[in-house]
Amino acid sequence: MKCKGCYKETKDGYCLTCRKKLFDKARIPDILPFDPPKGNNLASFQQHTKRLSISGVQLKYSLRLEKKQLVLTEQNGEYILKPIPAAQLEALNDVPENEHLTMQIAEQIFKIPTAANALIYFKDGTPAYITKRFDVRPDGMKFQQEDFAQLTNRTKEANGEHFKYDGSYEEIGVLIKKYVATSVITMEHFFQLVVFNYLISNGDAHLKNFSLIRSEEGEYNLAPAYDILSSVIHTPQESDTALDLYEKDMESPYYAKYGHYGRENFLELAKRLGIQKKRAVKIIDNFTTKSDAMFQMIGASFLSDETKVRYINNITDKVTRLIGVVDDEITW
Ligand SMILES: [Zn+2]
Image (cartoon, rainbow, N blue to C red; front, side, top):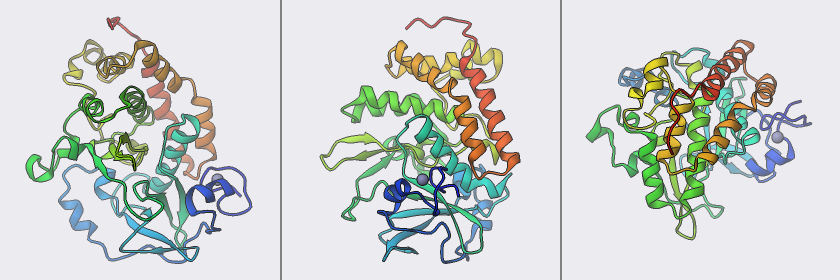
């Protein structure tokens, strides 16, 4: 069978490499010994959510490893379990695998640091996404983590429901420069993540989906990628990006002409983030030349055939835009 972590052939639900990454080598079956938790108030929650986004309707449960078994827990959770959202979304049953596949594409094809993750099933056969918390240290203590809504002092109380969709990726870059000692490398990682989210049509990469995490030595680093999926498959009305790339980006000649971002806009963002042109071009080109590997992985995934086709078509569109015509040469 295929490993529910990395898609490689394996005898059990998870291959040894994935068991090491996720479960301290324990032989965890890919079926949980319980049914999806019930008794939520999602219907009322949704009524209060103006913008229907994946993050707004995604329930999360906490799990821990106890005597080599995964159990639901209130405290000291080591894993986050995300079942199929109880919401009216397109291709609803594919949400868990969409997140798992997207994380695997990021990790395996583009070498983007990601939180360890896999697909798992409840006893009743419905799928869920499972990820190991990267903010929990081996001794159970927590690394200090702050997302960019916190770092830019935006809250629901002060800035309204839409608070995590305000701002721009450029603004996050300014804070990375301020807090991260190794900011040159980190900025490239961050830029890579922004382009990746565009490539796979994640319109939900908002301020809370990027974080800084403090190491034991007290240094801030960009947290590994989390909460990423091709969100447009489930919420087709969504805009291409959750945040602006930079202020007034839609007034750029390219955007004005084509009505969407293209290579030019991402090069301009890279310039504003202080990334060398040569490096920016290399990063973008890496994303436009790996379609075969991506399509192969999508084909091997546990998505429905219909969703596989949509995922592939979306990538094809975005690759075209990222290869893009550059009408105005940017002076760096
Ligand atoms: Zn594996």
